[in-house]
Image (cartoon, rainbow, N blue to C red; front, side):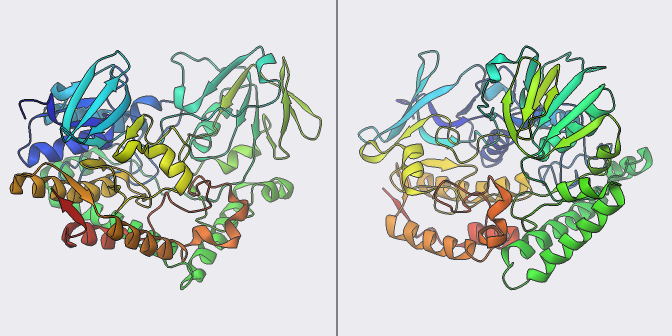
Length: 493
């Protein structure tokens, strides 16, 4: 590798980038770096520090399988603990020394003559490598909707994903736009301290109770002394996630499961919100599972507060003093909080840089024009030695489980090239096409394509109408496929 800068370059140092680095180290690879556009690692958990931020699956599952954390304070850990855990993993396994901070990639081009990837960074630096791993995640570019007159507003505007340090909301009039995953966490916290809170809802969200408990110091001590005990908790948690995924994947055969959850959620809503008119506004008009559901013990009952108002008729325009809803009412605000989520399947997001492969084909534009596609969610024909830690049709409830599964397949590919003393590995077009047909047939049987999802405004769906974000295969079945299925779909040259 003397003519290249590095054998492997990983773009991103969030959970996916660090997980990739840990797997490379485990298998004996040392000549790699991680390129990070910010001055600290951590990705999502570095960027999201808004009030109330927590993980939305149990902490027992939300960690690397080989590095459990016995010190979680709650069943659903707060964001700062997840951030600390990610940094702990990077430091314990000496990944930080491989990270190059303040390095944003602008372009990656495969050089067929030299059989390598050439990268151009925002500072003008150029790097080369044999293998390129895209680990930039998906939820990192905030969406700020373009509302009429938004430039006229004289107050403060913030996004949950870019929460400013020291923001004081006490006694203020605040508006929150959006009722997605981040918004339902921040709304109850903001409501407790502001003078007046107005929530602007486009689409109601299914909310289930959150069985969140503090983990006692005694139990934490037992987790640390008896690792098998914590592994048992993880297995139980993973079993529940597997069951939930199974119900969604097999929706057409098991529609009663989603209907049962809907019924339970509606019952829960009735116990939380007193006003029947409010309950009607907060009842989703789409099927359960069409978009990522929420769990919260605080969100729904927040609307019982005298200082909280829900506007569900849409936004007309902004003014100097606040927001005018479509019913003509002006809602004054000192601060507007965008809980409007992140770009997902839009051009320029994932990947957030140009990736140019065979015959000048650019990956993002190819996906935008032809639909999102990747073999096993990891490799794409025409892009040799290029791997996605998260690609089309590979998403799941547990990012760590999805990542570890994808890394199993990626390492099988890299090891095959190295063991044979070759230069390139690329998925064959016929195998890729057969997989695409298979995965779309599977996806067509999931809840995401049901007519009940039309009103969901789900980020699971791309511009072509395909549910190309979530995996239509259960996590266990997907792991077995990527671990043991033959690599004959690839050409090694």
